[in-house]
Length: 152
Image 1 (spheres, rainbow, N blue to C red):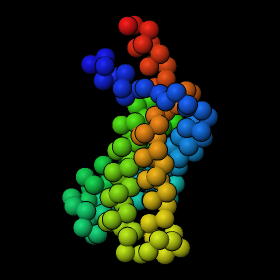
Image 2 (image 1 turned 90 degrees about the horizontal axis):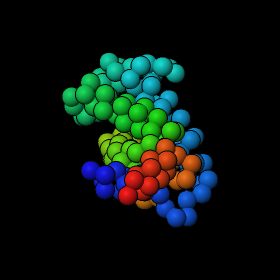
Image 3 (image 1 turned 90 degrees about the vertical axis):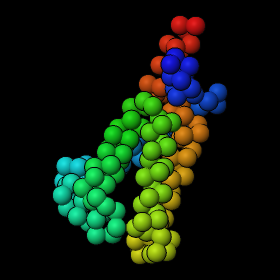
């Protein structure tokens, strides 16, 4: 179990402020998107409205899909902000963006102006990068990793 924890929290030797610069704004933006879906904050429709919309585009059961998408965005964004379990959170978020691209945006072309997949694709690339790179030196993952290594 300790070996798994080390791998999940391991940081790259060349981690810099770049990962922090990715994690913080993207994490906060995702938290806001998730809060729209889960809590109807920031002009969102909440679970009921989001669930109805998701069911209408074929993602059924809609309410469950709204919980899954909203939770991935809100809690995944929170994990990015605090730098905890960034690799697994990034993998879940990358999967969430793939679903968004292929279920909502792909038929609209690339550009955001036509509700295309530009934004979701950009986020997908960020999440793949974070899944590969890890949270960086300035994160709870780095703190946990140092503690796990010092226990050896």
